Length: 288
Length: 337
Figure 1 (cartoon, each protein chain N blue to C red):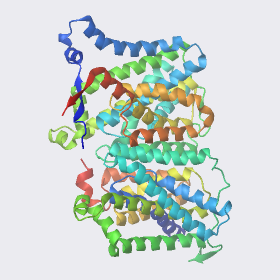
Figure 2: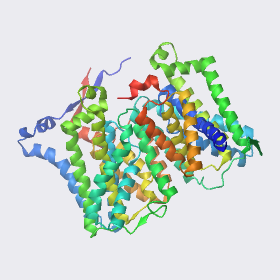
Figure 3: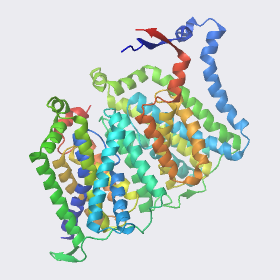
Figure 4: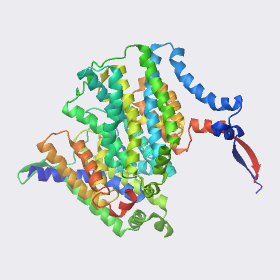
């Protein structure tokens, strides 16, 4: 029972981390290696608002999500837009941004155990005899809300529909009057907000550390590759597979193997089914 | 609007065209045109340790050469085969740990551990990267990014291979001059070897894999095979650097998987000029000493490389050596349109 409940929670946490990455990749074919950096920086911004400006927790979250969204949009507008379509440059540029942010934070002294965010609600409940604290339940709740929101947004909203159009066929979308660069900025901003949201929800469970940036990036990529790059349904399903695999290894083998499970998942997927669980339409494109 | 209707035209110098075919060379001037840049480079690197007397800076030259090997590998993979490796630290780590194990547990001298670590390490790296080689796209970058992080985590978590303390007591070189010149000669050999390689038939296939893999496949050539050959060459270069580094410091530890080894070669390649193979060398000779001078700033140095890298990529800069080669081989003039 432990495994089922904590596996579910872990899976939804992974899905939250990965959704932003898969959204950006799916829409503009841009591997956003700065995803983990955006995750960490949101945590520090919230912390800064609460502890130095003394803002209300809720207000701090809203403000910092807005700022992260702007950072994401700025990254696209000023840097990535210039290397659009050049795969080597895209990867190097976004990775360089990630390194600049993360190592800059590390240099700025943001390390150690001192940076924590308060939980939303104290206390816990027992589900089928397993104690679960409320914060983890909130993670599950927000995860479901985010997935539902994304589904509604992309099916019943003009911008959302435009984004989906871009994801399916960029040229056709441009012919129908969809501004591909503006949509990519929006996608990047949305992806950054999703990374920030994941940070805000998940960080109260532990400390804010710079290393989380690399970890989150790896988990997000693992989930996306297993699910098929750019496929949202695949990402959610893959999050459950990897999430349960992680909890099972932690329970039965060794507690430090989170990352190893993610790496193994990638390798096995690449060997058996390179386009992922749901990456069918891209199969021809990516497999030589 | 009365805009001047003229543009700049670039033409190859006559001497370049004449010297392209080796049999057509007839004058001393033409020979000098070919030989001077190469000799300046080779003699310059060979003289460097003699010119610089300080022991500290001689050590820095050795480090520069390690980064130069890594950057050569990166440039070769990125601009001739089309694979972006974000994990130079992976190659350094594998080579370094292999050499350290061979040296401490089997007691082999550096003359044996370094070749073994280079050849076997390259094979291990290639094998571990094999799953992502049949695919195009960003998979290679992702997997190479992950390996150093994950391997460092495994060593730390399982406390194998010395855990966080590392492996101490690795044998050192017999003399300082062997130590110094071994790596310099290796860099020169790899540079000219790779330059020769990319102009052979194999090099053509590599470039075909980069530009149009479907066409290569349609010619009945296995892409995975050629990609793994290329990855083997690049990772063997990295492993050579790692093995040498371990013998230089007489110690192997998790810091072999440090980010510097991944990001600095990329920055060196971009600054020096990608696709020239000399560029990465020049880039390392510029960046590594700067990075030594900035040692006091700690991780801020990585921020510094990252920002340089971003600036060079965003502003579409071509790099030092591309520019220099163009000036050397071509002249410009204004022509009326």
